[in-house]
Amino acid sequence: MSIDFQTLHKVNEGKTKIIYENPEDASTVFMLFKDDITAGDGVKHDVIEGKAHVDWQTNRDIFEYLNRKGLPTHYVSSPEDRVSIVKKLDFKINLEVVTRRVAAGSILKWGKFTEGTRFDPLITQFHYKDDALHDPMLDETYIDYMIQAKGSTEYQEMREINAQVFEILEDAFAHFKIQLVDFKLEYGLIDGKVTLIDEITGGSFRLWPYAKEKPDLNQANVLAELDPKGRLDKDTYRMGGDLSTVKSKFDAIAALTAGFKDLP
Ligand SMILES: Nc1ncnc2c1ncn2[C@@H]1O[C@H](COP(=O)(O)OP(=O)(O)OP(=O)(O)O)[C@@H](O)[C@H]1O
Ligand SMILES: [Mg+2]
Image (tube, rainbow, N blue to C red; front, side):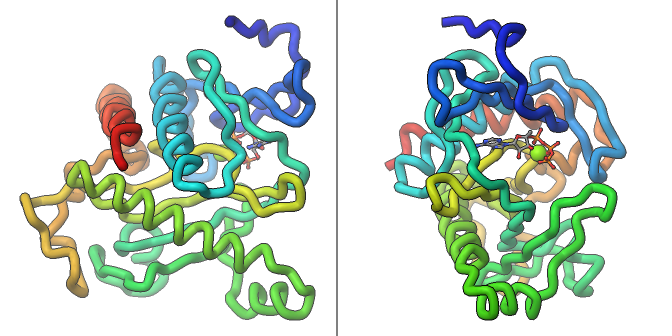
Protein backbone atom coordinates (compact mmCIF):
# COMPACT_ATOMS: atom_id res chain seq x y z
CA MET A 1 0.00 0.00 0.00
CA SER A 2 1.28 3.43 -0.91
CA ILE A 3 -0.84 6.45 -0.11
CA ASP A 4 -0.77 9.36 -2.58
CA PHE A 5 -1.11 12.34 -0.26
CA GLN A 6 -1.22 14.80 -3.22
CA THR A 7 -4.75 13.62 -3.90
CA LEU A 8 -5.97 13.78 -0.28
CA HIS A 9 -7.57 16.68 1.53
CA LYS A 10 -5.25 18.20 4.12
CA VAL A 11 -7.22 18.76 7.32
CA ASN A 12 -4.51 20.40 9.36
CA GLU A 13 -0.76 20.98 9.36
CA GLY A 14 1.18 21.60 12.55
CA LYS A 15 4.85 21.86 13.43
CA THR A 16 5.59 18.12 13.33
CA LYS A 17 2.67 16.41 11.60
CA ILE A 18 0.15 16.77 8.78
CA ILE A 19 -3.39 15.42 9.13
CA TYR A 20 -5.16 14.17 5.96
CA GLU A 21 -8.70 13.00 5.46
CA ASN A 22 -9.07 9.23 4.94
CA PRO A 23 -11.33 8.89 1.88
CA GLU A 24 -12.08 5.27 2.76
CA ASP A 25 -13.13 5.89 6.36
CA ALA A 26 -14.58 9.18 7.60
CA SER A 27 -14.11 8.14 11.24
CA THR A 28 -10.30 8.11 10.90
CA VAL A 29 -7.57 10.40 9.55
CA PHE A 30 -4.00 9.91 8.35
CA MET A 31 -1.27 11.39 10.50
CA LEU A 32 1.93 12.01 8.50
CA PHE A 33 5.10 12.73 10.47
CA LYS A 34 7.45 15.51 9.29
CA ASP A 35 11.25 15.87 9.65
CA ASP A 36 10.80 19.20 11.46
CA ILE A 37 11.94 19.74 15.03
CA THR A 38 11.03 22.83 17.05
CA ALA A 39 11.61 24.17 20.55
CA GLY A 40 10.71 27.24 22.56
CA ASP A 41 7.13 27.27 21.26
CA GLY A 42 8.33 27.11 17.68
CA VAL A 43 10.99 29.85 17.92
CA LYS A 44 13.85 27.38 17.33
CA HIS A 45 13.26 25.29 14.20
CA ASP A 46 15.27 22.81 12.14
CA VAL A 47 14.73 19.96 9.74
CA ILE A 48 16.50 16.67 10.47
CA GLU A 49 16.37 14.15 7.66
CA GLY A 50 15.00 10.84 8.89
CA LYS A 51 13.46 12.22 12.09
CA ALA A 52 9.92 11.63 10.79
CA HIS A 53 10.76 7.95 10.35
CA VAL A 54 12.09 7.41 13.87
CA ASP A 55 9.32 9.50 15.47
CA TRP A 56 6.77 7.43 13.58
CA GLN A 57 8.40 4.23 14.91
CA THR A 58 8.57 5.51 18.50
CA ASN A 59 4.99 6.76 18.39
CA ARG A 60 3.75 3.47 16.90
CA ASP A 61 5.50 1.31 19.47
CA ILE A 62 4.34 3.43 22.41
CA PHE A 63 0.73 3.72 21.29
CA GLU A 64 0.49 0.02 20.42
CA TYR A 65 1.75 -0.71 23.92
CA LEU A 66 -0.78 1.66 25.51
CA ASN A 67 -3.63 0.18 23.44
CA ARG A 68 -2.53 -3.28 24.55
CA LYS A 69 -2.72 -2.06 28.16
CA GLY A 70 -6.29 -0.90 27.55
CA LEU A 71 -5.82 2.88 27.64
CA PRO A 72 -8.20 5.10 25.66
CA THR A 73 -6.12 6.36 22.70
CA HIS A 74 -6.87 7.57 19.17
CA TYR A 75 -4.26 5.26 17.66
CA VAL A 76 -5.41 2.62 15.15
CA SER A 77 -2.49 1.45 13.00
CA SER A 78 0.62 2.43 11.04
CA PRO A 79 0.09 1.30 7.44
CA GLU A 80 3.33 2.65 5.93
CA ASP A 81 6.53 4.54 6.75
CA ARG A 82 5.78 7.87 8.52
CA VAL A 83 2.01 7.33 8.33
CA SER A 84 -0.38 6.38 11.11
CA ILE A 85 -4.15 6.03 11.07
CA VAL A 86 -5.88 7.57 14.08
CA LYS A 87 -9.50 8.06 15.08
CA LYS A 88 -10.67 11.49 14.02
CA LEU A 89 -11.13 14.01 16.81
CA ASP A 90 -14.63 15.31 17.46
CA PHE A 91 -13.26 18.01 19.73
CA LYS A 92 -9.71 18.98 20.55
CA ILE A 93 -9.11 19.89 24.20
CA ASN A 94 -6.69 22.79 23.96
CA LEU A 95 -4.50 21.76 26.88
CA GLU A 96 -1.13 20.16 27.45
CA VAL A 97 -1.21 17.77 30.37
CA VAL A 98 2.21 17.43 32.00
CA THR A 99 3.05 14.73 34.53
CA ARG A 100 6.33 14.69 36.44
CA ARG A 101 8.18 12.11 38.53
CA VAL A 102 11.51 13.93 38.77
CA ALA A 103 12.07 17.70 38.88
CA ALA A 104 13.71 18.96 35.66
CA GLY A 105 13.25 21.76 33.14
CA SER A 106 10.76 24.56 33.66
CA ILE A 107 9.56 23.44 37.10
CA LEU A 108 12.99 24.31 38.52
CA LYS A 109 12.32 27.98 37.77
CA TRP A 110 8.89 28.15 39.38
CA GLY A 111 9.12 26.15 42.53
CA LYS A 112 12.78 26.54 43.60
CA PHE A 113 12.93 22.78 43.31
CA THR A 114 16.33 21.16 43.22
CA GLU A 115 16.88 19.19 40.05
CA GLY A 116 16.26 15.52 40.73
CA THR A 117 13.63 16.01 43.46
CA ARG A 118 11.35 12.96 43.26
CA PHE A 119 7.58 13.46 43.24
CA ASP A 120 5.54 10.68 44.80
CA PRO A 121 2.64 10.89 44.17
CA LEU A 122 3.16 12.17 40.64
CA ILE A 123 2.59 15.88 39.93
CA THR A 124 0.23 16.79 37.08
CA GLN A 125 -0.14 20.28 35.58
CA PHE A 126 -2.45 21.67 32.92
CA HIS A 127 -1.18 24.21 30.41
CA TYR A 128 -3.31 26.21 28.02
CA LYS A 129 -1.96 25.51 24.50
CA ASP A 130 -1.02 28.86 22.99
CA ASP A 131 2.48 29.40 21.58
CA ALA A 132 2.14 33.21 21.65
CA LEU A 133 1.26 33.08 25.35
CA HIS A 134 3.99 30.42 25.94
CA ASP A 135 1.47 27.78 27.08
CA PRO A 136 0.58 29.30 30.49
CA MET A 137 -0.09 26.97 33.39
CA LEU A 138 -3.68 26.96 34.61
CA ASP A 139 -4.50 27.71 38.19
CA GLU A 140 -5.66 24.77 40.31
CA THR A 141 -8.68 26.69 41.60
CA TYR A 142 -9.72 27.43 38.03
CA ILE A 143 -9.54 23.71 37.27
CA ASP A 144 -11.57 22.89 40.39
CA TYR A 145 -14.08 25.53 39.33
CA MET A 146 -14.41 23.93 35.88
CA ILE A 147 -14.89 20.51 37.44
CA GLN A 148 -17.40 21.53 40.10
CA ALA A 149 -19.27 24.56 38.82
CA LYS A 150 -19.53 23.42 35.22
CA GLY A 151 -19.95 19.73 35.95
CA SER A 152 -16.92 19.08 33.75
CA THR A 153 -15.40 15.66 34.28
CA GLU A 154 -12.71 15.96 31.62
CA TYR A 155 -10.03 17.48 33.85
CA GLN A 156 -10.34 14.69 36.35
CA GLU A 157 -10.29 12.05 33.61
CA MET A 158 -7.27 13.60 31.92
CA ARG A 159 -5.46 13.73 35.24
CA GLU A 160 -6.19 10.06 35.88
CA ILE A 161 -5.33 8.87 32.37
CA ASN A 162 -2.11 10.92 32.39
CA ALA A 163 -0.99 9.29 35.65
CA GLN A 164 -1.90 5.80 34.38
CA VAL A 165 0.00 6.33 31.13
CA PHE A 166 2.94 7.70 33.12
CA GLU A 167 3.15 4.69 35.40
CA ILE A 168 2.84 2.25 32.51
CA LEU A 169 5.57 3.97 30.47
CA GLU A 170 7.75 4.52 33.54
CA ASP A 171 7.68 0.75 34.15
CA ALA A 172 8.30 0.03 30.47
CA PHE A 173 11.36 2.30 30.30
CA ALA A 174 12.61 0.88 33.60
CA HIS A 175 13.07 -2.47 31.81
CA PHE A 176 15.74 -0.68 29.78
CA LYS A 177 17.31 1.05 32.82
CA ILE A 178 15.89 4.43 31.85
CA GLN A 179 13.89 6.80 34.08
CA LEU A 180 10.88 8.55 32.55
CA VAL A 181 11.38 11.98 34.15
CA ASP A 182 8.27 13.78 32.85
CA PHE A 183 6.02 14.02 29.81
CA LYS A 184 3.40 16.14 28.06
CA LEU A 185 0.31 14.61 26.49
CA GLU A 186 -2.76 15.92 24.67
CA TYR A 187 -6.40 14.90 24.71
CA GLY A 188 -9.57 15.22 22.71
CA LEU A 189 -13.11 13.93 22.69
CA ILE A 190 -13.83 10.99 20.40
CA ASP A 191 -17.29 9.40 20.53
CA GLY A 192 -17.95 11.51 23.64
CA LYS A 193 -14.98 10.04 25.52
CA VAL A 194 -11.79 11.67 26.77
CA THR A 195 -9.11 10.12 24.55
CA LEU A 196 -5.33 10.40 24.35
CA ILE A 197 -4.47 11.95 20.96
CA ASP A 198 -1.55 13.43 19.04
CA GLU A 199 1.91 11.85 19.35
CA ILE A 200 4.27 10.44 21.96
CA THR A 201 7.83 10.80 20.65
CA GLY A 202 11.24 12.06 21.74
CA GLY A 203 9.82 15.58 22.00
CA SER A 204 7.13 14.52 24.45
CA PHE A 205 9.25 13.44 27.41
CA ARG A 206 12.54 13.53 29.31
CA LEU A 207 14.40 10.23 29.59
CA TRP A 208 17.45 9.86 31.82
CA PRO A 209 19.43 6.60 31.92
CA TYR A 210 20.17 5.02 35.29
CA ALA A 211 23.63 5.99 36.57
CA LYS A 212 24.15 2.61 38.22
CA GLU A 213 23.08 -0.98 37.87
CA LYS A 214 20.60 -0.86 40.77
CA PRO A 215 19.67 2.77 41.53
CA ASP A 216 17.82 3.62 44.72
CA LEU A 217 14.89 5.53 43.29
CA ASN A 218 12.93 5.68 46.54
CA GLN A 219 14.48 8.81 47.96
CA ALA A 220 13.71 12.52 48.10
CA ASN A 221 16.28 13.37 45.42
CA VAL A 222 17.34 10.84 42.79
CA LEU A 223 19.80 12.96 40.78
CA ALA A 224 22.84 10.93 41.88
CA GLU A 225 21.07 7.72 40.84
CA LEU A 226 20.46 8.95 37.29
CA ASP A 227 22.57 10.22 34.40
CA PRO A 228 21.00 13.43 33.05
CA LYS A 229 24.06 14.03 30.83
CA GLY A 230 23.21 10.79 29.03
CA ARG A 231 19.71 12.11 28.29
CA LEU A 232 17.81 10.59 25.38
CA ASP A 233 15.34 13.36 24.59
CA LYS A 234 14.65 16.74 23.00
CA ASP A 235 16.56 18.58 25.75
CA THR A 236 19.64 17.72 23.64
CA TYR A 237 18.15 20.00 20.96
CA ARG A 238 16.87 22.66 23.39
CA MET A 239 20.37 22.89 24.90
CA GLY A 240 21.97 23.49 21.49
CA GLY A 241 23.29 20.01 20.66
CA ASP A 242 24.30 19.57 17.02
CA LEU A 243 21.65 18.04 14.81
CA SER A 244 23.46 14.74 14.26
CA THR A 245 23.67 14.24 18.04
CA VAL A 246 19.98 15.12 18.34
CA LYS A 247 19.16 12.58 15.61
CA SER A 248 21.24 9.90 17.35
CA LYS A 249 19.15 10.41 20.53
CA PHE A 250 15.89 10.04 18.61
CA ASP A 251 17.33 6.90 16.93
CA ALA A 252 18.20 5.52 20.37
CA ILE A 253 14.65 6.15 21.65
CA ALA A 254 13.17 4.31 18.64
CA ALA A 255 15.57 1.40 19.21
CA LEU A 256 14.41 1.24 22.84
CA THR A 257 10.68 1.47 22.25
CA ALA A 258 11.00 -1.24 19.57
CA GLY A 259 11.47 -3.51 22.59
CA PHE A 260 8.06 -2.59 24.07
CA LYS A 261 6.33 -5.24 21.96
CA ASP A 262 8.26 -7.92 23.85
CA LEU A 263 7.23 -6.59 27.29
CA PRO A 264 4.50 -8.46 29.14
N1 LIG B 1 -6.89 12.18 16.31
C1 LIG B 1 -6.71 13.35 15.72
N2 LIG B 1 -7.65 13.83 14.84
C2 LIG B 1 -7.48 15.02 14.24
N3 LIG B 1 -6.43 15.84 14.44
C3 LIG B 1 -5.47 15.43 15.30
C4 LIG B 1 -5.56 14.17 15.99
N4 LIG B 1 -4.47 14.05 16.79
C5 LIG B 1 -3.75 15.18 16.62
N5 LIG B 1 -4.32 16.01 15.73
C6 LIG B 1 -3.85 17.35 15.29
O1 LIG B 1 -2.81 17.30 14.40
C7 LIG B 1 -2.30 18.61 14.27
C8 LIG B 1 -0.86 18.59 13.87
O2 LIG B 1 -0.05 18.19 14.95
P1 LIG B 1 1.28 18.96 15.33
O3 LIG B 1 1.81 18.30 16.55
O4 LIG B 1 2.17 19.06 14.15
O5 LIG B 1 0.70 20.40 15.71
P2 LIG B 1 1.42 21.56 16.52
O6 LIG B 1 2.26 22.38 15.62
O7 LIG B 1 2.04 20.96 17.73
O8 LIG B 1 0.21 22.48 16.84
P3 LIG B 1 -0.98 22.38 17.78
O9 LIG B 1 -0.74 23.49 18.71
O10 LIG B 1 -2.18 22.57 16.91
O11 LIG B 1 -0.93 21.02 18.44
C9 LIG B 1 -2.60 19.30 15.59
O12 LIG B 1 -3.48 20.37 15.41
C10 LIG B 1 -3.25 18.18 16.39
O13 LIG B 1 -4.23 18.65 17.27
MG1 LIG C 1 2.47 19.03 18.41
